[in-house]
Image 1: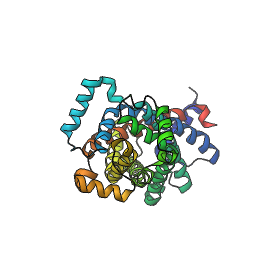
Image 2: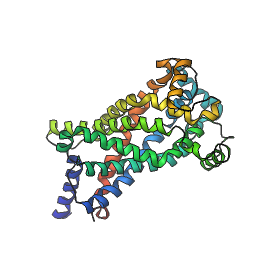
Image 3: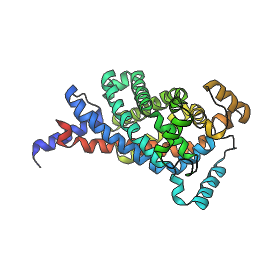
Length: 319
């Protein structure tokens, strides 16, 4: 390998670890396109890993059934015995159809918002923590807005039998014919209100932990295991910050399937608290989220960073 090529690879690694500035042209080719692909990979790997736990969580979120970890494990066991092992991934095709564009847009948008808000380097993020949080929040807003109908379809598939919705396309067709196109964005407002603290907290925490690691280790490269841990902490804090709104959006998304009336954020919260209590209602399934959330976010951030670094080493992304 030539000395020039070695220097180029070192430079790319340095840019990633230190968040160095790049020119507008390089930002588009190297950062935007590589982050689109890396984000798609991150979302697919993370969500497939925790799909059975995700399906279990949604099942409890949309009903007033009492939740406990024991009940959650019994649901998984019952699904396995009655419908087979692959039933634990019921709705995962819809999840992939949603999460691949969602994660791709989210990570790419985050890179661009960091550039726009001038919080690309560790020094800039340390000096402007508020802008760093805003960059993460705006990335979540953009990706949620672009892919929300897919999230609703995924929730419908996760809580119904195959006979009702045989495919993702069938979900869209049936909703269009029986409930109207406005249904595709039912629950959008609580989702958006939830994604702002979730995405902002997750990205801010992960980037902050990488910065602190750099300061404590004199810019030593972050090990994949350390990335997993940083991502897990980010996911734990992000999930906890936005969880009640996750309950609200799931209730509103699946109202026509459960036969219950959930029209607005306020009325949904009031009904959930009245029927199930504040903690048992609005925080139902949070303990399961504390298991799956850190795993998913840790895998997602780690996969993104490693894939993004790998892609940036290719000449195509450096033009």
